[in-house]
Length: 478
RNA sequence: GGUCCCAUCGUCUAGCGGUUAGGACACCGGCCUCUCAAGCCGGUAGCACGGGUUCGAUUCCCGUUGGGACCGCCA
Image 1 (cartoon, chains in turn blue, cyan):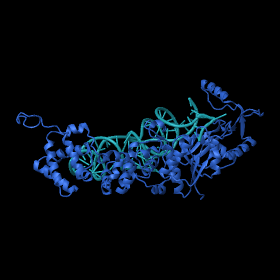
Image 2 (tube, chains in turn yellow, orange):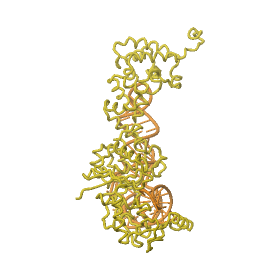
Image 3 (cartoon, chains in turn yellow, orange):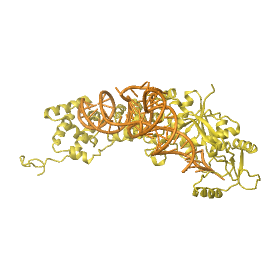
Image 4 (cartoon, chains in turn orange, brown):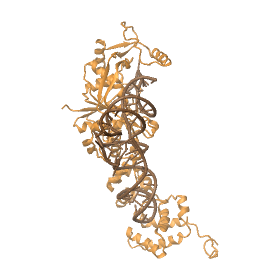
C-alpha cells in the first residue's frame, strides 16, 4: 500500500482556532496511525491578509499541542512558478480562458441577477472571446456545462454535483496570483497528498477542485470532510464565541494534553472511552469513526478533562506546571510545603489559573477577609474560643497536622461544640474565605508563626458580646 | 434564493434490524465530612415528524420539518 500523506494548510489570516486545531490534529493522527507523512503548508496567496504574526501564532499553537509536522513549512507565496506553468497548460489546451470583465461590471451584473432573484453565478461573458485586448485580465477555469461530478468522501460517502450549477471560477487573479481552489490542487498533487482531511465547509469547493484535477490529468486524492465545530449558538466558531485562539487556553491554565484529548473527542469516539493519551489516540484513531454531524464546543467538559489531567500529575509535576501562574511569594516556601500545596489543591483546582486563585492566600502577608464571611462566622462567642485555641496552639510540641487536629478535637470535646463551629471561624481567620482545603493541612503549610499571627489579628475583627440583661453588661464596652 | 451537508439525553457520543437505548460532561439526591473539592452510590433526561421495506425499525429507503455550511479576483 502506498504511503499515506496528509497535510494541514492554514491561511495565516487569523489565529489558530479550535476548528483549525482539530483539523490539524486529525491529519496528524491519521498519518501517524498509518506511519505516513504529515505536511504543513501555509496558504498565503492572499498577500494583503496574510501576516507573519499569524504564521507565528499557528506554529506556536501547533507546537504547544504537540502536533508535529514531518515536512514543511511550505509557503504558497514561494511557489508561484509552479502555478503559472500549470495555468499555461490549461490555457493552451483551452481548458481555461482570459476574462476581461472588471470587478465593477461583475458586481453590476450580480446585482441585477440578485434583483431578478436569479442565480448570481458568473455568466460566461468572456468564455468564448477570441481577441486578446491589452487590458488587465483574470484567468477562469472552463467548467463543463453538462454532466456531473462525483467523489466519495471518506466520512460522508458519495457526493454528486451537477456541473451546470458550478460557474467558471477565477483561478488566477489580475495580479497573477493563484486563487485557493487552484493552488490547493497544484500543491496537493505536487506534494503527493493522498488524503485531504479538512472542514466540511469545503465540501462545496471539492467538485471544482476535482474538475481541475481532471483537466490537468491528475487523479484526485481521497477526501475526508470533518464536521464543523460550532459555538453554543450552533453557528461556526468565530471571534464572538470567546477565547477561540487556541493559544489563549495556555494562558488560561489548560494543559495541551487536555486540549488534544477534548478536540479528539469532538467528532470522534472510541466506544465509551473518554481519556486518551497522545499515543493512544494515534493507535486508535480512524477516519471511519469520525461523525458526520457538527459538534458544539462545550467549555465545561474541557475544564473537566483538564482537571482529570491535573489530578494525574505528580506533586512535583504540578508545581512545575503551575509555577508560571503562582504568586512569586510561593517560591519562598520550603520545597516540602510546596509539594503539600500541590497535593491539597489537586482535587480542587481545575485549571492552573484556579490553582493560583485558590492557593494565593497561603503566600500573601495579610489575609483579605471576605466581609460576608466575617459577618457570618466572627460572632462574639468565638473570641474566647480563639483565646483558648491560641494558648493551646502555642503549646503544641510538634507542629504536625495530627498534633494540631488533636488540639481542635480536645477543645470541641471539652466544650461540647461541633467542629464546624470552630473550624469555620478559624478558616475565615486563616484564609479570609469560607471555602478552603482542610484546616489542619493549611495550618501545617502556614507554619506555627503565621497561623498564630492570623488568628490573633482576626481577634480584632470579632465584635465583643453586646451587654445582655443577665450579665448586666459586665463585659465589653464600659 | 440556489447548491451541498447534517439529525440518539441540554452537550459530547456508543449503537451498525431484535438492547430495560450504554458511557461521559452538566444537573439533582445520598454517603464521607471542619467548609469546598476529590471519591463512592443513586437519579432526572434522548432516538424530530410522516410514510414505506421487514415477522420486527433508533438502525435501511423516501418525504417533511429543523439546523448548518458554501455561493468573492478569501481560504
